[in-house]
Structures are given as structure tokens and as C-alpha cells.
Length: 108
Length: 252
Image 1 (cartoon, each protein chain N blue to C red):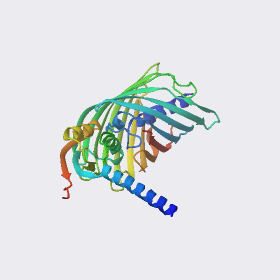
Image 2: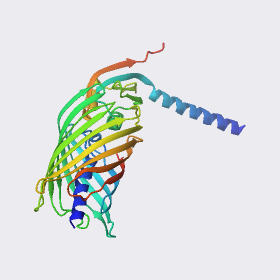
Image 3: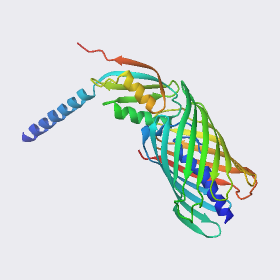
Image 4: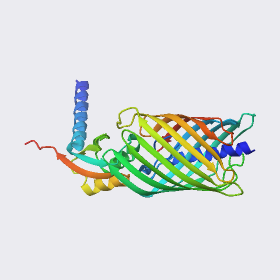
């Protein structure tokens, strides 16, 4: 019986940790940046490094070279401003053409 | 002795510049000046075979971006030199300092056209057994039109050498073609054909090599490359060929 209680307590604890982690990383939306001058994957490392260091909880970073698109998800309260994104991209030698934000609909 | 100096000169001219570039091509510099967000340590190991011996060179470069268009840094080569007559020497090579200044940049979707001025200075800080005992200053203009389908790179440069050695004119041209679709994180297989030339003013001698090469990029920080430099103009007749196996790694 004691063992069962210990297992249940552990499961509840693990579940609460999981829920905490999920709520922290819940994506509030996605940003799509059209970047000019992005030509080689090896050169995009600086861009990834800069984005990850400047934007908290950045997730699902994707770079499409053919279309010059950089996309990633951002969490609640961590939406990067256009100014900030412009600065990050220009700091690593590229240019921003357009920035589009997509937001998740809130369930009611 | 002259042969040794020539090998050093070839190492200095053909190899040291390459570490200043972050990515492709193999023996020609690129005008893309990213600097890894202003920091990072880069290195590569290059094994080459020449007519009179073999060299193993590992330059370690520390670049720093002062602005997005201005980069400075130092390069410290470590050299192992083995002559076919049995003599071997190894040690620290001459320290280089460099500055890269981007003079223009025109970007489009999946393409870029850029130009960079590059200044390099070497100092007699290396061990005598593996380092040329002269001070050298180089100025280069490096340009390139790079798309996701191909890259065209070119550079011209002038090298001022101290002592009574002749100044040199350097020129490079390279075309690169990626064999695999561009993805991120990178996994690339690139083919290159490169021309690397050197004109010595005093003796009016020329060295021009053609280098087919292949480059495998396995991650954002690690690439392997190999090329075979074949002299097509070789007035001094001191170099038969140079085969290269290189590994480039970005520490940060």
C-alpha cells in the first residue's frame, strides 16, 4: 500500500512538473521573417545563435533558404518586436524584407 | 633554402587567408562577413604535399566584429614541416593580424553580392625553423555573387614584403556549386573549381594553380574539405602539385 502511495505521489509530482514546463513553453504565436541575402546554411549559424540568445523560449526555428524565410514560435510575453528582429538580423549581415506575426487563438 | 622559403610563401599566401573566411570556398576568400555574432574561435587543419616536402598547418583565428561591416582579428598558425630529404621542423608560425571592411552589400531573396577590403599584417613572431623571416603586409579586394544555386568568388591583392624580397600580386577566382538542397541545420556537399595566382614583380615569375575541390559540411560548426592544386603556370618550377585535406571547426 505504501508503495502504491509513493508511486502515485511521484506520478502527481511528475505531472505537475510537466504541466509547469508546458505552460512555460506554450507558444503564443509564430513569427515569419523574410530575410534578404540569406544564401548559405553554414553562414546562417550566426543568425541562429543571435536569435536564440536574444529571444527567450524560442522554439521550432526553421530556415528556408530557397524562399529566404526564417520562422519560429514565441511564448507568451516573449513576442520579439520588429525593431529587435531587424537589429538581430542586421547584426549578422542580412537584411529584413518583411516580418509577419501569427497568433494562436485563445480557447474560451 | 630557396625551396623552403617558397614553401613558406605558398603556405602564407594560399592558406593563411582562408581561415579568415567563415564558410566556402576552399582556397579563395569569401566576402560574407558574419563573424559569428562578433566572436568565436575558428581553426582548421590542412595537410599538403609539395614537391620538396609535406606540411601540416593549423591556424587558429580569433575574429571580432567591431561593427556589422568591420571585423578585426588575429591568426596564429601552428606548422609542421617535413622535407623529403628527412629534415623535420615544427612550431609556432608568424602571427597575423587582419581587418576586414565591408564596402558594399546588395541583397535579394536567396542571393547576395558583396565586396570587402581586407588588410593583413604578419610579424616575425614565429620560430625561425618554420616561419619566414620577413614582415608582410597584404591588401585585398574580395567580392562574390552568391546564391543558393551557385557562388562566384574573386579577389585581387597586393603583398608588400620586407627585406629585399619582391612584392607580389595575388588573384583568386572560384566557382562553387552545391550538390544537395540547402537545408538548416546544414548538411551540404559542395563542388568547387578554383584558380589561385601569384605574380612576383622582381623576377616576373608566375604561379597559377587550378584546384578542383569538394567540401562536406556536416553541421553549423564542422566541415571537411579536400582539393588538389595543380600548377598550370609554374615559372619557378618548384611546385608540382599540392593536395589538401582540411577540417574547419568553429568553437563558439
